[in-house]
Amino acid sequence: MSDNILVVDDDDSLRRMMEHTLQQAGYLVSVARDGDEALAMVAKEQPRLIITDLKMERMGGFELLANVHREYPDILMIVVTAFGSVESAVKAMQRGAHDYLVKPFSREALRLAVERALSFCVLQRENKQLRKQLEESSTPQLITAAPNMQQLIDTLDRVATSEVPLLLSGESGTGKELLARRLHDQSARAAQPFVALNCAAIPQGLIESEMFGHIKGSFTGAVKDRKGKFEQADGGTLFLDEIGELPLDQQPKLLRVLQLGEIEPVGGQTRSVDVRVVAATNLDLAEEIQQGKFREDLYYRLAVIPLEVPPLRRRPEDIPLLAQHFLRRSAGTRQLCLNDAVVTALQGYSWPGNVRELQNLMQRLAILCTSEVVELADLPPNLRPRQSGDTAGVKDSPFMLPAAGFSLDELEKSAILQALERTGGNQTKAAELLQIPRHVLLYRLEKYDLKPS
Image: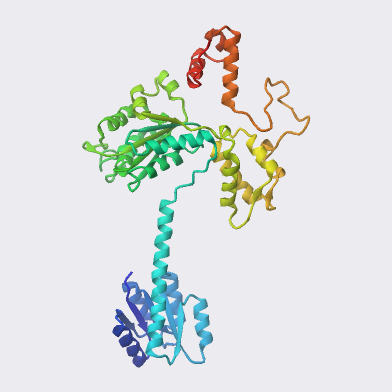
């Protein structure tokens, strides 16, 4: 949008005076005799500021104001009105005018009104740019007080300056993409693109085109050249979520990119890319390799630095912090907070959906809670602590979950060690005792670094 000013007035003398005054002050000035002529000029030039008389024989100032405000809301308008008709000017400002001048006005009053309006334009532009920058750079906040999560973030920050691939494993909803974004922001690639691709969300027939791009006419529906995610991320970071779902026939092509830094678009020629790959999975890739669903050589290329993201149930210290953060963000101007009993109940829940489930719950509570304090009664029934004698369905369970919760991994490790102790270290019999296949037991022994005596 240009910085010129459009003066609209059917009084030739006043119009020429305003034009001359503003030109002497260094502004670019266009003129129109009425609203109809002005609208045509606005569509062509889109001035920064319009100064218009309210009373004109053809389209008047009010109609011009309504049209401009509807079609070009960023253009500011100053209205000119006769002495004794200030009420009309006030009405015009209520409908979107920025300022008004009362006839007769001096040349200095005109210059000051224009200076004020254009200064406001500059502030308006800066605010828009700032909002855009904030939106583009607003990475969701990493909030944690859990030692295991803090240790993970410390490791992540240390490896951010390297160029090696990274594999984040962990359950769905634990924040793997958030960690990948932090890695990118801490790296030398921070000014370059961060591109995410969910391998499980792309139809199998389109995954190659989505990753590597295609050339016009290379297949039915390829109506123009298209860059794949690797080219979009060139110079930056590509986050491959749900990498365990990548079709087996596409895995060698990904391996080639990791080894040689080259991609081959569908129907096109090989080209080089400079991309750091961060992959994530909620699958047991060791088990996928055993079943022939994932290439071992690709796994070792991706997992140069493997990091396991702990589930929310193993980060009880984070639950109150995250819950209050999500509640505050969803509550708008309301000052919602959590009752202590609610916090205890949240920490006693297993959170199968992890952080994403907690966020969804807080959004629901922010909408449905009628008071300023979230009480136990506001929670869904499955999150409320059981009342005394309310043990239906669990009275025959070999384990009673404490009110404060318990680490599922610690429980599993304890059961494995007891089974091995009872069977004298015989892994086959221990697996039978635990009612799991022997290879699952071996994986758990390796996962928890357990060495049977």
